[in-house]
Image 1 (cartoon, rainbow, N blue to C red):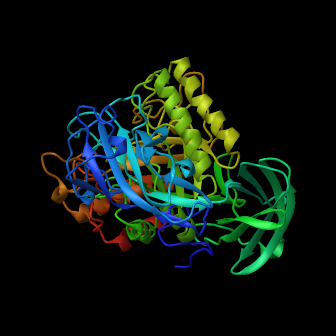
Image 2: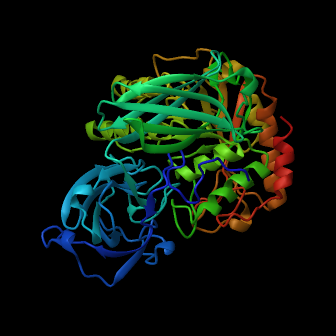
Length: 579
């Protein structure tokens, strides 16, 4: 597999790479704080514990070394790291920690973060000393349905399609050493109509006498360069990309351009950041999804990104690669990442290997002032963080009215979807946005439908005419649009169907949709018949089969939880390749 110029193995943030970094993954001291006494007893200054945990795996998983599924609302972590030089600033990054995270360095309080699905960063320079340093972390979590929780259960036992909770640090923790004045964020916007790459660069601690140089190359050959003085903390510009040097990014041809950003102070380089972008444009135009000016037909599979031994956390980068390899081997060109913001290394591999990704916000399950605030903040942060990945072609804000149960009629809940739609649009004008995947849409750039009928003939008759999909099919559980909203000639995608379990994988505690198939051959027959119906609908712009893998008690994957196929992947590919 060909990597980008700035690829660093296991680097947690592949869209903004620096060389001076250190992983803090591995063994940490760990302690349950069931009585919430840790702060009162000053555990931030150090605590005794017989337990160790393998970060970034949560205590609920076997990969953590603990494997205890009980819910504990307060937990503590601690480990040491060595500092030999204080001439630069040191940042500590948490790729993901669920839910409220407090951080101390050498007993000095650094800060707090709320939320589970975004990276957060603290500058810890002033608390450091030469020699050994101690980072202490307290995480509070619970069963609140107001939190953005995705597929995490809010009871002591799994139920329906909700699984074991995720508590605490579940993504990588790492240190980065930077100049006090440095690049905080880079956004790339390919403008295919103008043959330009538009970019914005945000700086930390702006000061006079700064300049930026940005260099773009393709396959090691420089194709564009721009230098300019910087007059404020947000620097914006554009580079001409000559037509002869334009290589379009698609799932079939995932060509990427390498980018190096240099920040100068008085003509001296004080920061160097490596990145990349894909020369691609995705639009919803009338009833078609258009990629680089050509119609795009989506053949997706729903992917929840769970592993038996590690839950929401991938066991390693190889596991992420294997999921994408198997997805493509079955002839799918995309995934709907369901109720999860995936490890950014997955998105990098999707960029490099060529896979379309629908990025879906995890849900809350109670509508309140608090939940409105939580999901709005989290959504905006997620979009800004993952903005540059060309593989992401769609933002999904809500799923099946979860957290907005009365959106069909409630003006207040409709307003929440509209507020998030327009906030997302203000951050990112380049991708289609789906307001409420499955049904009861408000403002939405794509109309998506969910239907789990197992009868191909009923599926065909239920959606044979476009009007049945856009108004009310007799087999559609809920109306496609909320009151006051209607079809505006958007593309139509059947974004959940199938969900067929296989008898050999079921027991009294497991399930799929409808009656399970008797064996692998019947599973293939059902997949074939249902998929061919959707492929035959002239107005349909794509489909998403449920699902890639089994997840805990939900056993309707094409692959088992350990990624062994239930059906020959070539036979699945043959069906997908018909369209």
